[in-house]
Every structure is written in structure tokens, then in C-alpha cells.
Length: 423
Ligand SMILES: Cc1ncc(COP(=O)(O)O)c(C=O)c1O
Image (cartoon, rainbow, N blue to C red; front, side):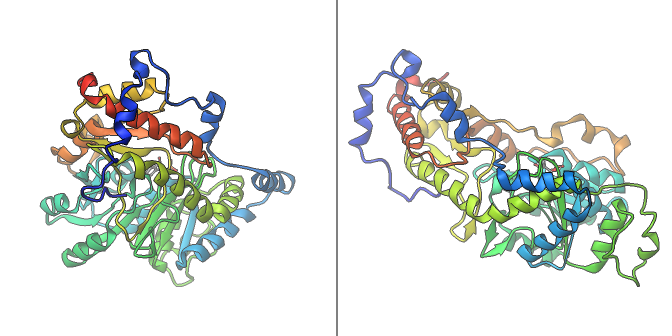
């Protein structure tokens, strides 16, 4: 949702709010939606009768059947040749890094602005993360920054589609091809999203999804690995599975069917049953939630100095967990802290959003855990994201009145922004 140049709130709308005292200064709140309905508006996960029935069926007739069925459904949805369900996204990532079969010391480019699981399992196979910055207006992989960090040891690259916004995989894949890098995807936040009508997760040699409870396709806990080749599938599944019907008879890994390699990363069949139900409603629900957020964001990003995590026109994104907005304090004429405080007083569930940057954690500066110690870089884009992001809840059902009240609250705060100034 890009702001078209020169397209701002019509001037007559802002002065109307000027008479109203800000709630932070003792005035009436702009958001009067009842608290219980407000809570309900971002309820997650959305499980209903179908999920209850599916789980009950597993309780009444215990079997691993739902796992194979989920794998079939997933293959059908993504039109990919190989998938393997895992007990979470983290274990699918570990299996994927194992499947790479790269020599120890090989480097993988990865954003620091991500959950630990995109990075830490690399350690188990002697792989070394190269921390790459993000674009603070998309929260996604910054290809220009990656270009500066390429070394002779760099072998792969793993962008993360943060909060359901696809990375620019077309540009990333072009560059990776030129440099001979393997492309992977962490699609833990991006179930059913697309770039140029191609599903995220299918842009790369291997990708993973998470079904953890907060995710866009929740099964309470669970994950999926997706592979373009039989070889990757064989190796990834052998890492954490000892009974895999799909491992090719002539594969060097076939002899390990029966023993595996020491881990058991099988998904719980109840989670698989839940995930199957959720997959059926995924596209419709993504579209409904996206329409809600768009209705809100398209109005509020007209305010000076306020931006959102904008998709390119050829992207089909989803929203989950947070609706990320960005404030340019100079342009807005107030600090993020003052703005958030005023919005909260109006009843908006806004937060000054901070996300832990992995490269700043002790694990990465202690050489004992790594084949060679990762470089700890300066990542100004990631720091800027943490200094400028304001997150709003994602409305997971239709609440037009609440959205109108949020818009009113933003207008009101912006109309008073000069007096709010700094926090
Ligand atoms: C970007 C990202 N990748 C991977 C994972 C790991 O998924 P799981 O929680 O299913 O292990 C998460 C989970 O939060 C995540 O946010």
C-alpha cells in the first residue's frame, strides 16, 4: 500500500479533529468499541467445528494417517514434487540445513531480523551465518546489503518473508544464479502468499513453513519442509525420520530407513489434522484479513510521516501477528513514543515494536559454537526498523466500525502532533 505522491488527507478532514481534546490530555477516546469485541477482533487461532471434529476423530481412532494426508494436500496446493511434515518449523529448518550437505565453514546469508530458528540450526552442521540487513520499510531481506557481504565461502541465501510480505525473490534469485548460490526460503509467515502469481516457498530449492499457534496456518505446533528434488527430500527426511515411504529405493539414504540418523521429528497427527482443516480455508481467510488491514492502512498512510509494510503491486501478501507501520519522526513532527502513547490513550492497541536482532545475542560472538565465528556487523536498516516500527493488531474478522474508530484516532493524534512533539 504505497502512498501515491501528493495524495494526502483532504485538508478539511484534519481541522475537524482539532477541536477534540486528545485522550492523553483528558479528552474522550476515539475508540469506544467494547473491550470484549475489541479482544475478539484479533482472536487467533480461528478453530471451529471442523477442527474439533478432526481432532476428535484422531482421539477416537488413533493413527498417523493425517500426516500423509496433510503431505498430499500440501503437495497439491503448492504443486511441488516433495514435502515432509515435521514437528515444527525449527525442525524442518534443521533438516533442510542437513540436506544441503555443504562442507563445514560454508556461509549462508540470512537476515538478523528473524526468529532464532532461521539461523541457529546451521551451527549443527558447521554452517556459518552471514548476517544481512533488512529494508526498514519492508522488514525484508536487503539484497543490496547482501551483495556487499558475499565471500568465497558463501554458498546459500535464506530470505524470510516477514509477517507475510513476500521478499523480492525475482531479484534475489537472479543475483543468486549469477553468483552460483543456493536459494532457500523461510516461509514460516507466508502460507499462500505470492510474487508474480508464484507461491512463496516455490521460489527456492528448499523451503519451510511453520504451523505454530500464532502463524497464518496454525496447528498449535508443526512444520513442513518443501523440496524440489528427490535427493534433498531423501536427505532431509532421513535426518529426522526413520520410516519414510518416499525415500527412493536407489537413494544412498534408503539403507537408513529403519534407523534414521538419531532424531525423531515426526509431526503430531492431531496437529496434521488441524493443519488440513486450516489449509482448506487459508486463501479465503487471507483475503478477508488482508482486506481489513488494507481498509485501515490505505486511510492512515495518508498522514504525513506514516508508512506501512508495503507490498509491490505484483505481490499477494497476508497479514499475521502485527500490522507493521513505520513513523518518520521528522516528517510526522512527533516522536514514536509520543505518538504511541497518544494512540494508546485513544484506545488504539498500538505498540512501539522491537524485535530481537540475532546478531546482537551472545551465541553468535562465542566461537565455541561455530565452525568459524560469525562476523557481527553493523545493520543500520535493522536498527532503524526497531526505532521506527509501530505495530497494530491484525483484525482477524470483519470489524468496519472498529477500523473507522482507529482511523479517527490516528487523524486526531496527527492533528495534534505539533503539541505532542517529543515524548
Ligand atoms: C521466521 C520464522 N522462522 C521459523 C520459525 C520456527 O517455527 P516453529 O515455531 O514452528 O519452530 C519461526 C517461528 O516463530 C519464525 O518466526
